[in-house]
Every structure is written in structure tokens, then in C-alpha cells.
Length: 383
Image (cartoon, rainbow, N blue to C red; front, side, top):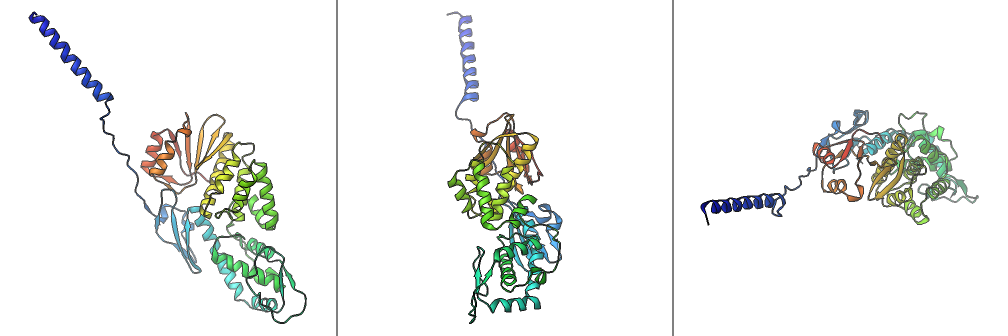
């Protein structure tokens, strides 16, 4: 073999080896990947999380330290009528609006008019005609006359309307006072105007829109349940889904009504029955309020660009008729964690155009990763 042939063979061998090394680097299985970095749980300042009017008032203040869980902020309210905890800015707004009502009820229960009505109530046997349980003045003394009909429910709804609060509130401090004033007014045969001072509430502490508020205040509980049930059935919800929602631990009657009213704004959209099934899994009022707000965000988006179908597989998402995906997040502070990473990379949520609509804000890492995965991020969306 000539010297030229040997040099040519050597050159070709070196070129083949170099090519093999490049292929190995590009496609080899031994490439190490950088592990995903997640946000750590964050404690925020209250002033950076909620409007100032919800943080300090004549009879309350909110602690500065606000822990978050990746979606929601936890507020602690210190007031002259008790200490309250609120998960989320929306719940904070409800609790703050309830404080003046609790104070007014306390004043009413110390009045002479209340004492006289309570004495009248205790002097006659009672018979409840509403759906509530007799908690106050149920021990009667020696009266032989027929029981006095007591419609506690109507009096409770009327008292709640005067105070601008939820008659089905989950705040125990408010609930027990409303119940007491309602029984005394009904059994003591005295008008609420004689017991409660006339006042115009600055804020209505009831979830949902003004339409839902009227239903909650105007309709007896049994009629309101029947109305909600009828509407849910018209949305395509099955009877078992409706029963599950009605008995869900997180959904009070007022929250059910707000949810039904919001879902009704998505007329002719497919998948509403599936959303009812998802709502039935709400274990707390905070979870229920989250879903009510999420549906409300979608109803607003539907007015901008029609929604075709609702997807309720763990997380509520909507597909618009143009193919865009809309994920509503009525959350205070969205962090990048394993849960959010799994959601953002779900194969069933692949779409050329998709976005998350957040009522609060995100961490810089959450925004960066969501956008890298093809999600447009919209912050400060009103539920």
C-alpha cells in the first residue's frame, strides 16, 4: 500500500470517529438534564396582597404576615368582635363586611327592646314554621294556649338583608347572632325595625351577583333549592350530580345560588353538567367560592369570545369556538410548583393558543415557565 493510500485511510477513519462523537453528543442517552426548580412557599405583606380598605378599619386590622400556598393567601383579621381567618381576598372582603353587622347585632341584643321581646318570646310556646332548629327560648313555662307559629327563616333573611350579610353565612360569630335576633323578633312579636337600627350597608357580604343576592334574600330556602335544582337540570346536570352538589360540604345555599347564576351565563355551552360534578367535590366554602369565581371569569370571557365547551377534569378550563383554551385562576399569588407544572404540561390541554386568567399575580418563575410552555398570562382579572 502506498503512502498516499495509508494517509487517505487514516484521514477517513478520523473523520468517521469525529462524526460518531458528534452524533453521540447530540442523540446519546447519557445527556444530563437540569432538574426543574420550584418556588418555595412565600409569606407576603398584607399591603402587597389586598386593597388597603380591607386591611384596616375602625374596629379591625389585618396582620401583616400573609402566608400563601401556591394559589391563595391566608389573612388573619383581628377585630373587636373576634379573630377571623380568611383564605383569599374574596373571603377577606366578606369577613370584613360582616364585622359592622356583628357589632350592630351585639348592640341590638343589649337593648331594652330586645329584652322585652325576649321576655315575650319566653312566655309562650313556640312552633317553628321555617326550616331552622329551635335554638333559643325553646323551654316554655306553663302556658296552655296553642303554640305560636314562628317563621324564623323569614325573619333571619330579613335581618340579613337589613345588615347586608349572608343569611347562610359560614361565619359562626355572625350566624349565631342572626339566629338569635330572628327568633326573638318572630316569637316576641316585634318588628326587626324596632330591634335593629336603620343602616345602609356599604358592602353586601353575599357571594355572587346582584341577581343572586335577590334570590337569596327573597326566596324561602325550600323554594330557592327547588329553583336551583330546576336550573341545574336545564344545564344538563344529572340528578345524582345535583344531589351531590346540594350536599357538598363546601356549598352553602347562597354559594349554590351564586354558582347556578354564574353557570347560567354560559348558555348553550357544552360540559356544564361536568362542572356541576366538579363543584360537588368542594370540601370547604373557600373551594366553593373559588369555583364560583372561576365560572364568573369564564362567563365574562364568553361575552368577549364565545366558549364552545367546558372541560372539568380536576381543573376548570374552557375551549372557545376559535380553538383557544382559557384557564381561569381566581387566585391571589400563583407560584411555580409541582402541581402547576403538571397542569401546564397536560397533554389534553394542548392548543395553538391558550392562556391563564388570574385575579391576582404570579411569581416571576411561574410567569416565565407558563409562557415558555405556551400559556399567555393575564393578571389582575376581576372575578
